[in-house]
Length: 509
Ligand SMILES: [Zn+2]
Image (cartoon, rainbow, N blue to C red; front, top):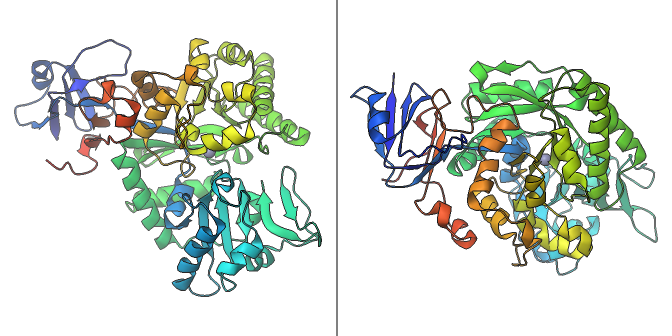
């Protein structure tokens, strides 16, 4: 039995107990005491290892309440176009990758933001053909919801002038010929099935890298919110865990189309079934399609009737209204205490909605980092009144809505401290503060990444707070973290992380 005494720390328990402590005692992967160094030491034998935290802030390890592990892992292998400021730059990056990719193999590229491009538009198939004619190319927009294919990829995917648009999807067309121009909006399902899966070896390597990134950022537990998750993803995650590639704890949401497929847990609880993920497909800044709304409401009814927790995707103002209505209807039909249903993103908060969400007892799981990553886009696309209600965290928390945070990786990097900085200053990449009255303080935003995220997945007995009996998952942050300005916080990184009392990445000391 290994035991460890973490001492000389500024312990923030996140347990809501107001406890002031400077040490945590760990034994056999669990916390056995939190208190003064003397109190903590007396819970352990004299052979316990000691770790001097040198006055740093010791917190429960972070929990990413909403991310997509496999897409994030795959994104690490893709051509990164996140910083491109012109179509020529995207062409260059793809051309370089093409040089070391066998002809005929897919090139996956992602992350561009058309509002950042000099041309101010999406690249088209013709643009991508300039980079390569020999490789099918799939370029994914930073939002994840627009795909651009080159000509070869369009023909492999079977998308031509005669292809019908699926509900909620748009095939952009050349105004003269009527042929698809390569820009495909809201058509992930149709496009992605044409792109072969990564070979297992490639994928497991990428997952290993991804886990490293999560751990280095202080995250030991993730909630995978992929709406297509079912038994085959469960089996894949189990395999990745069994061979040591996947070293995080995973709460896997179950796609509403796979309701009832997943077992409750596997591998001693390293993999746990989470809420049912319900999508409401919506196009940016438009009213969601009536058929999509009906399908969402039906999935909400079915999941709620099955006694399950729900996590429902809603970004735009109208989508949030429809989701709240669906939840109200489901709860009216069969009221249930402590259902912990959640709205994922809740990006634009309609007037009067915070009180309704609070009354329902629904948690909002959101992504502060979107303000930085996508804020300049919002500034161009949203009207003033919508901007004021964008990521309205203070309004939500003052109304009594429980909040939790995630990265939505690969949409943003899984970096809780960077996310906390954005929650504090609300600054876009270009430095404009969006809705500064919605800012919160460091501790509140840290809570969304710890106790808030734990509660959002019924994990509070073992995760998200430091108390005896909880898992010894901890993160040590620099001394001044709680008083640092947002600018300073952006330069901070965890000093050390422990998962079940084991150091997750080597400390340099
Ligand atoms: Zn997501």
